[in-house]
Length: 99
Figure 1: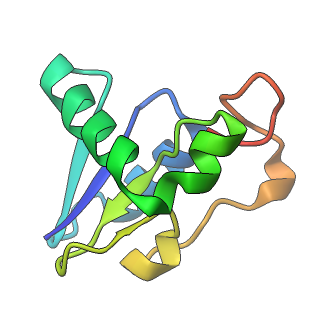
Figure 2: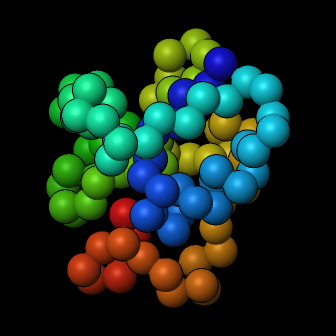
């Protein structure tokens, strides 16, 4: 099972959610719905090198994918999904560069 951490208000996460609806093998974890999910994500974000760029540049780092072998990545393609086209210019960060 691939775990996907995100939030329903994040445009990148919503795009990923649409792709996994009705598919087995994915678990969506909305970090905005319960503090436990947020704490689990923050522990992962604080300890995984996959978030080095996110921490350095001040973005959240969602959607985040935890693959079946435990690999943590921000790359949807590693989870068998497609990234949202960057030309759409929709972002949840103040500077418009991502989530």
